[in-house]
Length: 231
Image (cartoon, rainbow, N blue to C red; front, side):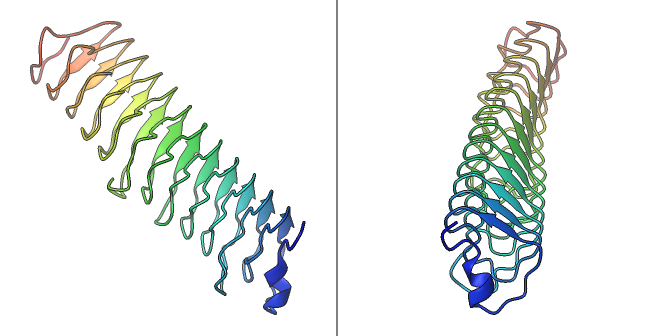
């Protein structure tokens, strides 16, 4: 492609085992090795010298667009991971998946259109499904360890950490609560508190601010916002 991998030659670098296909793909990746960039501006890098990211795969328009020194990232999708500079060992699949991630330890997985698309430097986070964990923000703790699996699972979580949401819209309204476990469609959908467990479709539906509650079974619920209850 036009100017693909141009700086590997222009800078006099000796990178090895790189493959760049598409206009401007790998344009500034002058020192990196074992990278694959396929698509317009995939793995383009920035204009400064010394972009030595290695063992990365970026497939799609602007995939890994901003990469400089990141390692072992695998990205498929238009604009997926397009802000990553130095983050490592992150896997992103889908349009704009992980689209705001930049730096940090990484080791994140985001699969689905716009999954995990607002977080910047989180690590150990897994989002699978359309807009799963989309709301995790730049203010979220880096050591996040949140898991969202399902259509819009954990959609509104912003700074809450160590939450597990499995099922369509599970833990939907939680923003800052921590250490919740919601398994099932709409499980704990209205819970904004912490350390609650809801297993089953719409388990804990009525709970909003009650903490340390456990709801087992489809539609299991309490009659109000109590703490330390089992239903």
